[in-house]
Length: 112
Ligand code: AMP
Ligand code: ZN
Image 1 (spheres, helix red, strand yellow):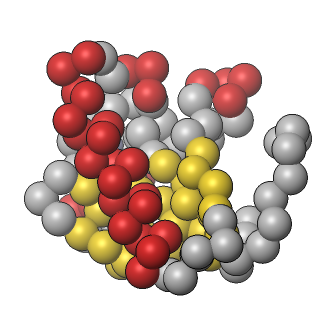
Image 2 (cartoon, helix red, strand yellow):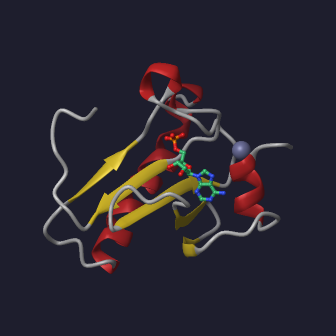
């Protein structure tokens, strides 16, 4: 498996861990776009959100629950943003499903 985030999840490529359990792994983004910028990934490989289906709803819910858990742990009570870039037009650059948790500053709308 040549996937960067699969290697990060299994520890063969180093990262700064934030949270881990049997289903997912969360780590600091290498190029943070906000004071808090954490990536949450499933341990199972999915190329993108578009690679998931209804049978993955428990896992997808778990990823969102984990984002909220980490946001509370990081004291982001003022608010935060969760982003899933999907495909070329979505700006996805790593082809393993990941949630961005962004916080610690105001985020504007619409995004770029
Ligand atoms: P996306 O553009 O949504 O696919 O997001 C990919 C994210 O992965 C970007 O925010 C990158 O900064 C981040 N990234 C790429 N390589 C690494 C790495 N080795 N460790 C941590 N974050 C990474
Ligand atoms: Zn992968």
